[in-house]
Length: 92
Image 1 (tube, rainbow, N blue to C red):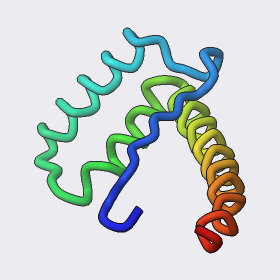
Image 2 (spheres, one colour):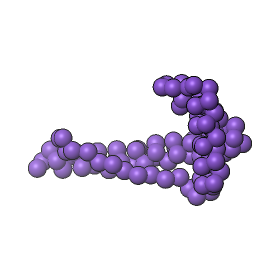
Image 3 (cartoon, rainbow, N blue to C red):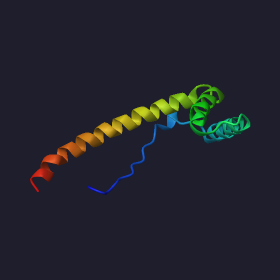
Image 4 (tube, helix red, strand yellow):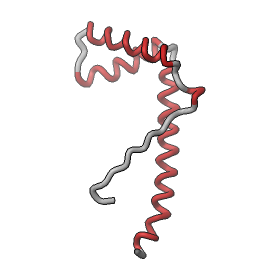
């Protein structure tokens, strides 16, 4: 796959998701607060993550952790599957 790439989308369990209205409202409020404080660049992301945690009562942190675990699990599964293809490619 030299010079090629693959995009893989992965989601979390529905039970771990934030309701859209909660997520959208928290993001909008956090972005407005960040802008009001003049935050820019690398200061924005940690501020937004903490604001989202506070504004969602910790649900955003749980959702982010669930996504981290889901991504790590999928990555491991893909690694095993690709590893199983490696001997076949050597013989081709």
